[in-house]
Every structure is written in C-alpha cells, then in structure tokens.
Length: 445
Image (cartoon, rainbow, N blue to C red; front, side, top):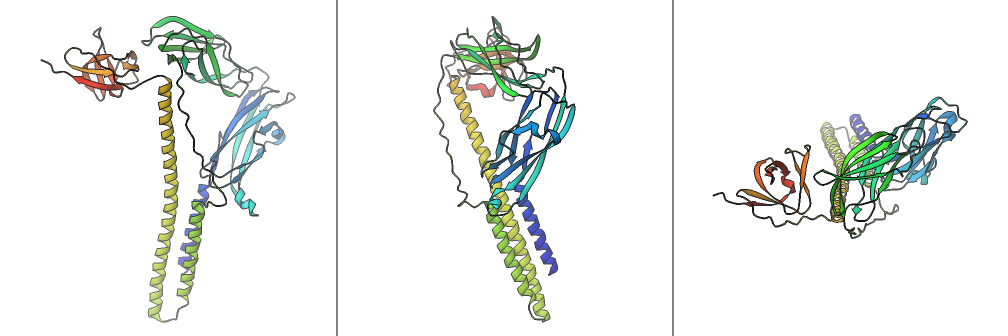
C-alpha cells in the first residue's frame, strides 16, 4: 500500500512540473555588449520578454545588478510592469547613459529579471515563477570608433512622377553618430542593360551609437512606367559598404486595397477558467477519491480471501488512477498543440492576404494572354506579368531576360518542372513550370 502512495506522489509531482514548464519565459538578447563607448554617449537596445503560455496575469520586475553603474541604465517600462492574460511578449527599451565624467575602462555585470504570478498576489500570496538574467559587458575608449552596418535594402512602391524611396535597415555599432555618405542607383532595363541613368543622394539620417533603425533615401524619379533593375550602392566615406541588385516596377498609380477588419476578442479574467486550472482541479478530485478508496480497502477484516480481493481492487484502482492522469495530461497537451496549429494557420492566411494585396498594388495579374501561333512543336503562353528566364534549370543561375506579356516560346526540352525554351535569336534559356499558365501542343507533320 505504501508503494501506491509513492506512485501517487510521484505522478502528482510530475504533473505540477509539467504545469510549471508552461509558465516558462525568456528574454532576448541575452547579452548587452557595448565596446569602445565614449563618456557622454547613450546606447539603447530593444529587449523582448516573452513567455510560452500567456494564460495568467504576471508582474515582471527588472533589477540591475551592476554595482556603481546601476544608475546608468533605465527601462522604457520602468523597473516593474504587468503583462496581462493573452500578452505573449513585451518590448522593453533598455538605455545606458554613460556620464561625461566617467573614467570607466571595463565593466561586466548583470540585469536580473523576475516574474511573479499577479493573480496569486491579488489573493494575498506571492509566487516567483522563474528568473533569468542578461549579461552586460561595457568597455570605454576616448577614440572615435566607426562601425556602420547595412542589413537590408528594399524599395517602397514606385509611381510615375513620384520620388523613388529606398529603405535602408542599418545598425551603428560605433561610438559616434554615423550616417551613410552617399547612396547611388544605377538604373538598368529588364534585361539588365544599362540605361545611362544614375540617381544619387547624400541627404541621409544619422544613427546614434548603438542604434538600429530604418532610414530612407529619396531620389527624383525620371523613369516611365515599366520594370527595372537598380545596382544599389551605399557608401561610407569613399568605401562601398553595401552593394545589391534590386528589382522594382514603376506603375501609374497606387491601388488602395480594401481595409482588413481585424476582429478582437475581449477576455474576461473573472469568468474564463484556463485549461490548466481545470486539469489541476480534475487531478486533485481524482487523487482525493483514490486516497479515500485506498484507506477504505485497508480497513477491512483480516480474512485472507478478502485481503487478496482488496489487493486486486487496489491494483485496479491504481491502474484507473494512472490512466485518468495520463488522459488529462494528454488532453491538456493536445489543446496546447491545437492552439499553436490554429495560430500558425491564421498567420499563413494573413501572409496569403498580404501577398494578394502586394500583387494588386504592383498592378500584376494572372490572366492568360492569347499566344500567337509558332512553328511546329509545343508552345507556352506566359502570363501578363514579367517572369525570369534562367541560364540553367535552377533559380540560383543567372537570369538571361524576363518574359514579356503574350510571349510564346518553342519548347526544346523538359526536365523536372523546368522548360528549355528557344528565343527568336536561336539562343535558349530555362523557365519554371510554376510561371506557366497555358500550354499548347501542335502535331508535327
């Protein structure tokens, strides 16, 4: 009988461990490293505090453990804030201000983050759910240090007679305010042939030390409607720090998509009971009934036959108890998985809607055009937006040209979803089956 109580205790502890895992949380980045910092400067880093299961209201407490430099760091949320039910993550801006009079050479410390169950605090108790920390590494320098990185380049929508705007996602890892010296665009046609058009600007915003930001480069637009490439170069002083070939389209106007109505659901903390609480309640009730049953079976008479019967009943009760616990745990985990699948499904639907809107804004279409007749053989009709034709049957190869609306090609060969097509000048290239909307077959006499 004592063994049965031991099994019960172990299962209950395992269940509570599973529930605690649901409350786990984390912080990113895990390290704040500022090297070559200058006295009198300020650095801001975005921290993301997230949790796996946002089914409870929690209180987050941030405690710098940096000794004499604790006063240098501040947080946009303050040292303490609350995350409500359903709130899975929180953005906190951590700012380190280094005094002008500082003589700090090097320092290492920590920022500790604690999380408390606010619902238990409201009822008079305090429970620490979990704690984590961020490592801080500081080193000062009196010399100017320039380290400017461009992480991404992309065009906004481009329209006829409107400025061209380039988005530059950058980070200043130096210790002085820094901006790109110049940005240039060498314009090429759809076949990547130069058009003798080069656009430049040096009116660019500076980034403060430690700052990550998207800045805009604006150019006068001399281009007509059509598709183009831009050999884009970002300069820092006389050095090119980023060069990238970007594709863009110039359209006649902007199509305003229908507004997407977002549905919101308000959660009433007083009436909604989480699945974890229901599961815990069921475990407690089953456990109490199991204990009562074991106590009743122990108090029988000493008749040997009845004692054997009680043992059999105790074993059966234990099996039923273990099975019930397993069923509850599986149900809880299944519900969590279903919620995750539903969330991913919604995100995929949103991405599909955004792609449709983006296509509408670019004025693209998927209507099949009438393909003219060609020589004997198989012909392919290309849809009325431009599609790349590659040197080899892979998207990693060089693009030879883009197919125009209504273009029809003679097929020379087909391999694994790729068509080798013949150009009017007798050269050839490869186009993916995904970019084909119609196929015509003519008999060869």
